[in-house]
Length: 371
Image (cartoon, rainbow, N blue to C red; front, top):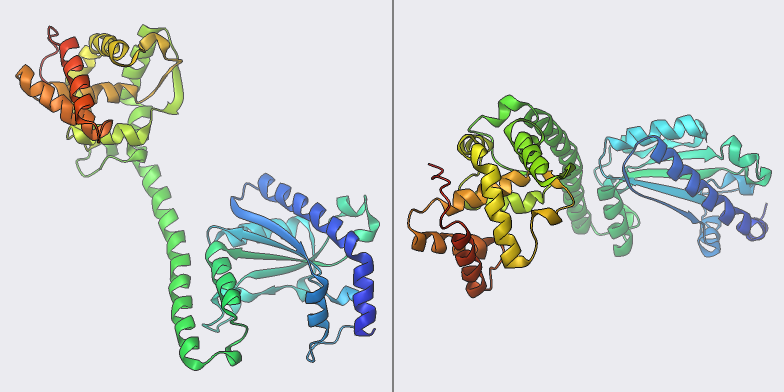
């Protein structure tokens, strides 16, 4: 078939390809969601007539039929991690009719310049459930799978006009190769980093880890600390006193971590040690604390919808800050610094006012020093 005949045939069917692309996009998103694969994005495009005209003009390719063009409809899946490509590939082979002979795994290339093009390309046909609705949709289409770094690299290469090694001077090709190597290493390192974080998350859930002096305070260790043991018991006791339930969510973890670090409770082991002294005083301390919040900001414990996990650690940090100093004057200064560091970094006067009010609410309270 002549080039113009192919182009005319495509233009005649272009609305069908647009509808097919939209249907395949929705179907593929459903496949990935049901398969439990977290992806950065799924997109589709239908080949522009101008792009098809250029492709048909290439001297190294001859197309006899419109069906020989497998990329008239194309879908792209961008994943976060390199090993997710295999998960997506298994789902595609299970859910679509794959033309293995015309599919290609470009990740097998050994060319060091090909990083941005090391994606997995499947040539597929629509699944039976779509063809049952529209028989005319039985056309080959392409699914491309690549990582977000591979995608970024390919897009930048395209924007810079890097079409092929033959078209670029040698010094520039060398710089492309160095960059490609760095990004390839980064792709692999992200996979290893994720695995390390998953291992860390599993280990930190073990209670024995929380008493180790080597374990630092972060969101994962704070979550583990709040889920079980004395912190969970204190949250339940506080919720019971207030007539509230304990929520599943963690109480502003970043804020609580900053608060605990401000009073040198920067390790779960130290927090657990302090809780041994603070636990019997929690409910009485909370009563005074909510008296303070009512006067300072107009809300008390009765206005809480629930007690979020780790709320007792926020109270612990206040108790620790208050009783680090013996004299009332020093306590005001200590609490002023505490509030200025956490809540009023640009308003020393307000931090001092809140500190004086806080110390006043605990002036006649004998909660004992945390030491």
